[in-house]
Structures are given as structure tokens and as C-alpha cells.
Length: 518
Image 1 (cartoon, rainbow, N blue to C red):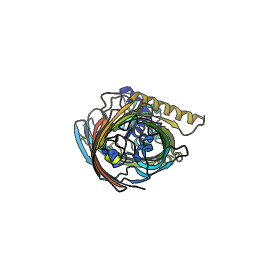
Image 2 (image 1 turned 90 degrees about the horizontal axis):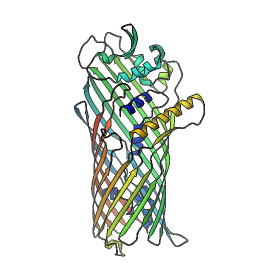
Image 3 (image 1 turned 90 degrees about the vertical axis):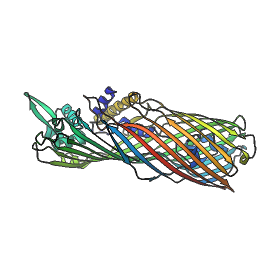
Image 4 (image 1 turned 120 degrees about the horizontal axis):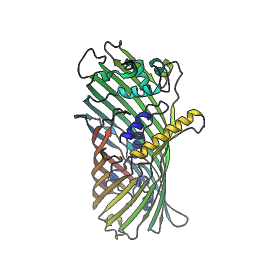
């Protein structure tokens, strides 16, 4: 693990791009969302079919439709984040936020060859990035300012040259400008120093609030071959929006007024926006009226993304220097340094492949009248190649700057392969029918994406719901309880092991689906 973080801490120092492996994981380690019915059965929609949300899991399942349909799935999501850092536990609540499940239209028609064909257009919230992480602790081992000192020391520049050099990261340039990082002659040798190191014991606080998500529009086609084979495909257009507000603070825990450090605070707003394309192909086989088996393949999403960043820093170094502060954006720091505005960072992100195997058993499946069927049990097994997402430059020129950018992305991609592994997702659900009413329950689990067993992360979802079907109208209501574990590093250093905060997120989603057949 240490070798990986040495590499990443060096990569993070480059200004030309801000992408890190965690950005790839954010777009990759997602879990199915959909209608209230799908979520009530744990998201297991790989072989069941007859649901608009099948277009996002296994589009072949749309081939079971015999009628047209309109579906709307509004919902609300709320959560609480808990963290532990250096022995200190912290909780942070998030306000309820709106969450849209699968909504759209399904059109069923008879083809010229006698097969039954289906076209669907739907929209779905594939990922929700809303969170509120807060953690704090006392650290006598390292400081966040050391990451700036490391980068500056490697540059070979003096402080004045450093804060005016666009080749250094914004954080390092601000640290130099405010004298949070400086040079000093120690035992006759010129060395780079980070002022917080003089304190010896630091209070550290990191607040990270994020918002946004991935909303996908899918256009799907499916066909029914003699009620035994169902084949389908979807073209997805995911829209990506992510904003992170971070405030990282360190203060002197010794309260010594003469050690040249009182506190510093770094604030950052980072946004990523863009859209992409992907494909989903699936097949469903029904050897009889009771059994169904499905297989689906999801191609990588090719995202075209754009990053923007703005930041500010305030450093209080007691008698070392009068208080200085600086506010920056992607343009303003370069203008202050007299080197002109920085370019917007544009790049491409390729997410992993997904493979889904599934099976369903319908109780009373021999009944020709669907209304007389008693229920079902269904399961999905999903494998995501989480170790192979990759970044690529949006430009294809061969000049020196572009070669440096390509080298950066190659290094990040190598770090991704060393850090992450393929993940498994298992989903199980069922439904019991009582005339016009239904009762549903489900469970879903997604495994740890990190290769290092010391880094604990996984996701568990428990769900339940009810449904009503009558006279061409249906209403479903579902509640999903989620439990997630992950990690967060406040900063990354090359010459020291890094301290991580452990995160636990407990959240719930209430979802209602209203549909009309016509």
C-alpha cells in the first residue's frame, strides 16, 4: 500500500491534471437503482423482465412486455455519515435530497416477422454522490503541509519562483505565498520546512461535502422469439455531475505562542461535469413458464469530462510572518503570478466492464393468466472489472506538453490497476402476490474494490416494499436501508505512511413508482 501512495502523492502534485484513482472508482463502484419494484427486490432484474428498469440491467427483459406503459418514480434519500480518524469518532447528518428512480415510456408492437418487439426510452439516477464527511483527530506524526513541502523540494526552485510557477500545484503555490512552506538553513544546509512540523502535535479537521450524481438516459430495443428467447440492447447516455467542497484545517495543539505556527486552513471547490456513452446487451432464456435465465454485458462508459477548481488558504505563523492569505481559482492564481490564465482540464474516462448472470423462478408460472401467478424469487450475480478503468487525454497532439500529460495519465492508470480489483455484486429478491396486492423483499451486497485487505469497503442494502395492480394502473412503494464502508485520506505523503479515516454511511431511500398501461 505504501508504494501506491508514494506514487499518488507525487502525481497529485502535478497541476496539469487533478485526476486520481479515487475519481475512477467514484464512477465505477455504483449499484443499480430503478423503480420501486426493482429496488424492493434488491435490484435483481437480470432475468425477471417485464420491467422498464430492465433496460439498465438486462435489456432483454423488456421483451416480455405485451402492452405500452408510462412510469414515473420519484423518491427521497437521507443519510448519516460516521467517521473515525486517529481514535476520534465523528458523525455528520445530511439533509433529505430528491432522488429520481427509473421513469419513462415502453412501446410494444408486432414486427413484420411475427416477433413481438419492444422499444423503451427511460431515465434513471445511476449514482448519487451526495454525502457529508467530517472527521478530526490529533496527529503527532505528520502534517498536511508536508505534501506541499515535498513537491516544492523536488522542484529545485526558490520560494518566490515557486509560487509564480504554474508547473506546481495550486496548494503548493499558496503554501509558498503564505509562507506556510519556506526554506531555512539548518546545520549549514538549506532545507525546505513546513511550519506545522515545528508544533509537534496538531489538531486536524477535514470537512468534505459532495453533491451530484450520474443520471443516465437509455434507449432500448428488445425482441421476443417464440416466448423462449428474448434479446435486447440499450444505448446509454450518462450525464455526470460532481461537486466537492472541502475545508481542511490544522492548528497547534500545544498552544505554544513561539513555535512559528498557530494554524492554517485550506478551502477548495472542485467540480467535474460531462457526459458519455455506453452499451448494454442481454439475452434471456425461458425453457418453461416457471424458469428464466439471463446474461447481460455492460460495455465501459466513455466519458468526456471537464474539471474546474477554486481554492483559498489562510496561514497564521505567529512571529514568523505577518498573516497572509490568498484566494485562487484556475485563473486567478496564474494571473496573480503573472503567467496568464490556466487552461480548463479536459480528459476522457473509461469505466469498467460489467457481466451479469441471473436466474428467476416464478411460482404458478404454468398459469397462462399472469394475474393468477403467486410470486417469484430471483437472483443476480454481477462482476465488475474495477481494476481497469482508465483516464486518457482529450487531445491527441504530440508536442512536449501533451506527452507530459500522457505520461501522467499512464502513471495514474498503473496506480489504478495496483490499487483496485474486480468486485462482485450479489442481489436476491422475491415477491408474493395477493390478488391485487404484492409484498416484496430483497438484499444486495457489493464487495470491497481495494486490493489491500487493510482497506475496508463494501455496501449492503436491505429492502422491502408493497405494490398494487388494478385496471391498467400500478403503484409501488419501497424503502431501502443502506450500509456502506469506505476510507478517506486527508492528504498523501511520499516519505511517510499515510493515515486514513474510516467511513461508515447509513442511509435510507423512500421510492414510489406510479405507472399506467395503455
